[in-house]
Length: 306
Image (tube, rainbow, N blue to C red; front, side):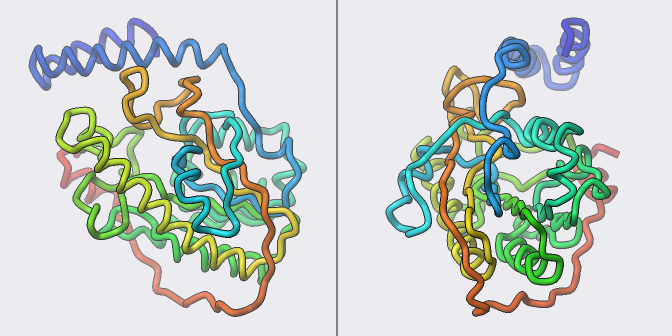
């Protein structure tokens, strides 16, 4: 964002929200922008095709220290970590699936719950592209549930065996699926480049919930998805599996929250990098489900964006 663009947006924020709230929003965007300018010049972290793996399991927005808290509960996890090349999903897709990786993509099946595939992925470049979010979005919860992703990944492995398989879950990214945390923040905003309602991280920033509450929900959401990763690892053959994340999540470090793009803060870019394996024991059969429909126009209208 240029200074002129920021100035235009700042005026718009003040008109919409008033001087106090609009001014604060503009100031936060300016502050984040300083980090982004640095992040576009200071680039570090791992790109997925620079490493050897047969299956890559991506846990969206999973911090390394979050994984470390539950690692001893799952035999396939550990405290191993590394740095992602990105601080947001869009940035991660751009950096990992560029034209320089054309040969690798052609041998890869990508099964993804992350809607950034709509903006940054061309299915013709891949052995298989299954955008689970398109027809398995749960509007009641506001996300793509992990069992849907597991089933589609197992099906891709068994019916369209690729040389490499990427399985991208939406959890532990908000919203938190476990019921006791379901009211702590709104769901994913399909069709937006931002979220037009308060997320759990907005509520944390405003003091509506405590950091302890947010972290507890975040951790339980990780346990939720790892239960389904366990099923995946028992129903796919892959000699070398990497469990990682596209980026982490900020909970107030440097005054920032969530996962703004191109922000090179280590707490945001440090993610799990766990090496394990998978064997298809054939003990799970994917469930046949009716596809769901997500009407983006209705979402826009309901939220006042149309």
